[in-house]
Image (cartoon, rainbow, N blue to C red; front, side, top):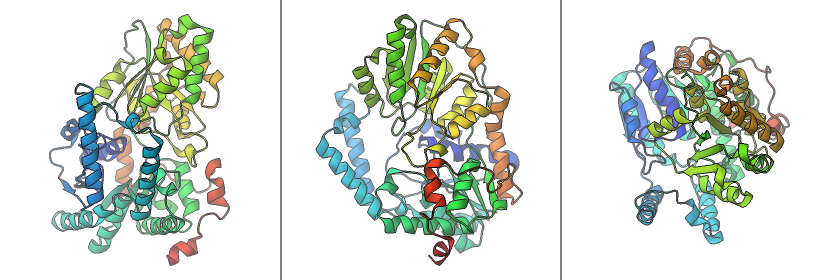
Amino acid sequence: MIANAFPPEGAAGVYRPLRFVRHLPCSGWHPHVVAADQYYYERYDPALLAMIPHQTEVVRVRGHDPWQAFQARRVVQLQNNGSSRNGGSKAPLRPTFRSSVRSYLSQKLRTIEAWSYHPDRSMLWIQPAVKATVALCASKQPKIIWATAGPVSSLIVAQKASQRTGIPYMIDFRDAWTITYNKFEASRPKWAILRDRKRMYRLLEGAQAVSFRYHTEAECYWHAYPGALNASRIHIIPNGYEGTVETFDVPKGELCRILYAGTLESYRYDTLLQALKTFKHQDLDRAAHLRMSFVGEEAENLMDQASALGVADLIEISGPKSHHEITRLQSEAHGLLILGRPSTMKGYELFAGAKLFGYLKVGRPIVGILPADETRKILRRVGSSTVADADSATEIVALLKRLVDAWSNDRLHLLAPDAVACAAYSAPQQTGALVRALEGMPAVDPFLPGRVVIPPSLRRDLSCGAWINSQSFARG
């Protein structure tokens, strides 16, 4: 298993490979993991190490990257300085960098990185990871090499190790790389984007199997890389959760508490704040019983906007928490908030944040403020009715009132998703679908080209010749 990010990293992308590592042995598969020895962990959570089965070997390798080593030292220094100023609390540091000069320099550095690193910032990890993978293949004689992206560098490790050992590889997508918008690609020159796409074509073409999260995502790749994929090799494996769905058992208390856990960067919440303002203006007594808690990065920016609108008293914020602490907060919340990406972002329809699947397990009403995206589709499948259009402050106000009324009447449990429907996203279901892919068996949920439509924000790129044709990819 090639998983660049792995515990003690605690970022959202870690949990998918970690779930597979934990559940594959039940199906007779015993993974060995090649992971990055990071210069700096985005969300350091050493408690996650205890979740790795003791028999799972994890080989950690690091590429020599002086620039990222310098950045890591700088981040640690700034955190320590922030901790000293805040009495030991490592508060998020972003507000320190609000000056236009620093913002300009930061953008320039991102552009330089985008021009220098190919295919991504983990570029220098590839060669040592290939070496470690080949060595593991020699000693363990695995049946297949499995890699999850991001970063795309992980897929290249699997491809190169496969070429050297003759062992087939499978690639797994946690995001729609090269299809949807991301900041790194947006800063890249056209020649680098073309090279990325040609590389992706070869990765898809050579894989024994490819797993996508949704049929819509698979359809997009089918159109973007014509000829690279065989429909029989495509497996649809969504994200999921561990354990069983909990029952709603939260004391009413004096406030109806709605929790959002995770980063807010690139997620849309402007209409939510407008709705809170309207709710407070229309019915102050009822609105005063609502409290929305945001735990994670970028919460300060939200609070600034809430203060400007006069609704800061309805909001609580705090910095990132450990997995254990987030689990506790979710169990104490009356509802769980999920947000979508702005509809101006290319490919926003393909997003369904990893936190959604953790929410499914908790047995609470899931409050969706969403565009027409995959998150909304999943909530519909599990019977969740607490969803409002992200473009409609009026719908959001009505939803907030409904939640507070249900809380007041002790009827919130009736708004929770259907537990039976949520079971489709459990770790055993996920792992069973993966095992079929690893064994070269037909997919549990077969992909049929043309069954779903390309999302509107991607239609022009994927259907009107903006992408390079298959012959160009093959020649590349």
